Image (cartoon, rainbow, N blue to C red; front, side, top):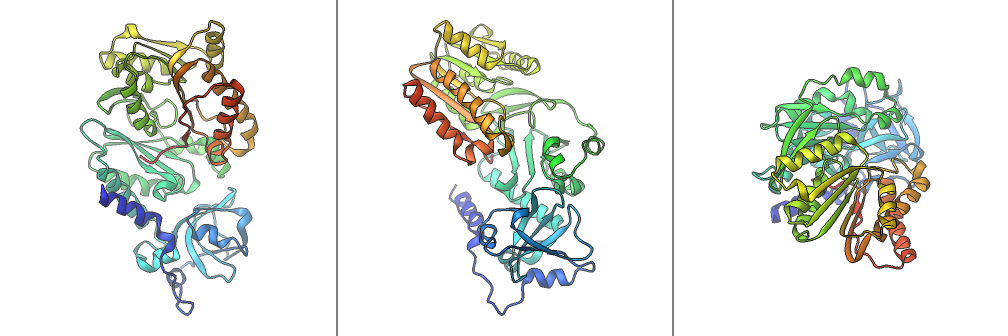
Length: 423
């Protein structure tokens, strides 16, 4: 574990490497000059450089002063990113349409230290994915009891826009950047080289990719389905049937530790699982000896999976009920009946996919959490979650919870989950 910590510290401190001397030639500029077609240069506005040197990988269009290069770069092209003096600070992948003009892949200091990946996306992909594999294996993933985990976590593994979840011998790729689509074959080659992977399934984030300039009809042609639409996995000794046609990649691997924790506190408890999807929290509560579990969701296919998972684990179906109902309506009904639970889990889908809808989404989170707090018995536990980065990164999610707690006049123990975790 100490070795893993050392690797993490090393990865997080890349922006603090010694800078080359002013008189030295830029490694990236030298390599770019040797390219037969040349490499375009995206020059940042004055005062905008440090943000990206410090590790932010998303160069937004408002930070760009000018672009040097003829013809101008196209979406997916490799470009240099430079400060106001036109000295490269790194390189990345360009997008002519997106609000994120460049996704930075490597900084100048890194290229100076190890030029093997400089301006070479194929080599960089191989290096970063291998590093992700090594990190997960250092943390015991996969294992005899868990073969569902996140292998590549976008910015967390410094491959912005690329997510790879592994479910047994199947890898599900979720793309949310145009460059991921352009370099699909190279990404597939890297993933296919992993010994335990036999199938690869692509799940493009269509709405996000539209903002990246991708056409939805083109995406369908790029990703014909050639692998099974269902599979089974094990997480912390519990078996799950997964549908690849379900939400996100098919399974929320990010909640693994929270699910396991729930199983340790559920003995003899009355548990409510709101937005239960395929029953992840419900299964762990049942495994932990809960007196009764109620799961609520609006998706019939998800509830059918949840019931299937109860049977798959030989759990008592008499203790668990899954109801197809709107979360708000269910909780309002429970409140009118003065019904309460010892443990309430509230894990809704993404209500704020972007900052544009942040205000309206905050109202929905406010209403959901207000109801959830009121149906959690006094002294009980509420675990509330948000997978909306716009809510958690702005701090609005925590403020919403604190405001609801004061208005309801009751203290609640809550665990506001912040976006998706890396493993």
